[in-house]
Every structure is written in structure tokens, then in C-alpha cells.
Image 1: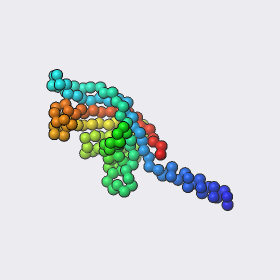
Image 2: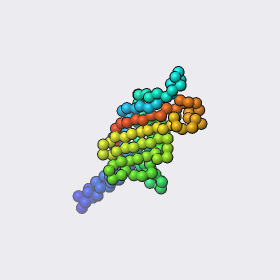
Image 3: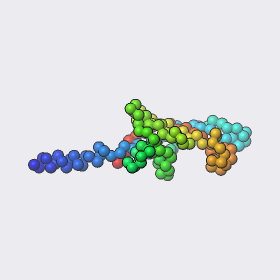
Image 4: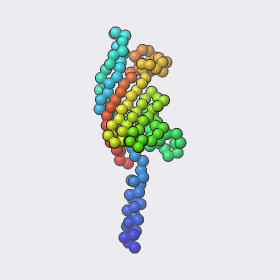
Length: 148
């Protein structure tokens, strides 16, 4: 009887860990993009330093439209939501209709973040409303599971 109770207690204690929502911390390692050179009035390619980190986690179970969300770690800024779950090959593709696009591969634990704003986006949507007021960029990096 005591061993049955002990077994039941172990199952109850381990159950939350096994059903807890997955989440990942993704850290950018390299970044590149384009910036507007005020002197030449031309767009140029740039290599950026980056310290960006993103938390990728499941949305609330009551959310009927989105499966995952991507949040900027530094300021807890919600960047985008993902309509679909990871594919059978481990790919998560987010941001179909957004200025941000985030792709992650759960097998390789790599990600790609793209920000499209600043070049082809109408000037009214850019931070200060002038040419070069925003900078399109791309980051690549690696993800690791977050423990709850």
C-alpha cells in the first residue's frame, strides 16, 4: 500500500513537468541589414552588433487563432504570433502578415528573424516618418529550451 502511494505521489509530482508548455530562449549571434546614409542619400548594407534574445512559447490554451508567440526578451515586447504549430519536420514559421518574420527549426535549434520595416514600407509607418528612419535587418542564432 505504501509503495502504491509513493508511486502515485511521484506520478503527480512529475505530471506538471511532462505536460508543461514548451518554450525556448533564442539568442541572436549575427545580424546584418541596410541603413540609409544621410551623406550620400543612399541605402547601404551594414553588419550590426546584436544582443537580441527572443522567448518563443505557446499561446494561452484559449487562443483559437495562434499556437505560438515570439516575445522580445529584453523588454517583454510581444513581436508576433504564429498561426501554426511546428511542422512534422520541426519548423515553426511565424509572421506571415507582419513586419517581423521568425522561423525556427526545433531539430537544429536555429532561428532566423527578419524585420522588413524601413525600406519598402510607406514613410508614414516608419518611426520618424523620413527616409532611413527605420532599418530593415536579419538576425540568425540559436535557441535553447527554457525550463519552467
